[in-house]
Length: 281
Image 1: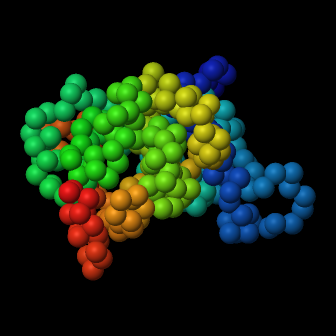
Image 2 (image 1 turned 90 degrees about the vertical axis):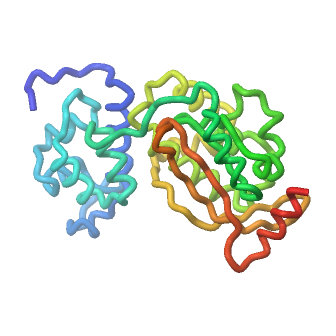
């Protein structure tokens, strides 16, 4: 660390790291961390000096981190902070990326969808599937997805962003059986992916528009919660065929790393396959 570290407006990634550490610190019960809960505490969670002590760093240096100073913590220090602050695996990975360790998600965007990727989507038949860029703009889909969510083809290209549609399109809200939980999950995964790129103009604009349009998004974004994607069962309520139990998958083509493919398949043992066939007409 350098004694010449200066106070200045921190860059977005440093500011996010500072705010994220503060938010996690306030969520740790001192008793869980092995500290006495006695004595008056003006704010919940751990004090800065307690985090510093438990993590093996100086109080001043940790304070600089929470101030967004331009200092680079080592991976070992980040690991120690993650243990002290009881971070989940997704939060640990997120803070490592914010601190400049580990590979960030590819920031590339697709200039149109490669033909072979569209052919792959089409080959999935009755399984709804779509492709998104690093900022979650939807750039391609198959007929099954258009039948599941007809609005994808009607929405203007500039608004065809997965996160924007989840929080602003009433049709998506009706389609998602657990909209409150699903939208929160989308938000935490999006933040985990774009954290190192919060200064990108497209991300800045999207977040600002969502904060203005959705109180639910605004509250979720302010929490600084992050999570990693995991394949799992999702439930949809479609106006034509009723309840659909689908398994949610996500993958990245090796030759198109700026894209993510999202695929929904029928849950084994359910009648979703028959319902998807009926939806296909």
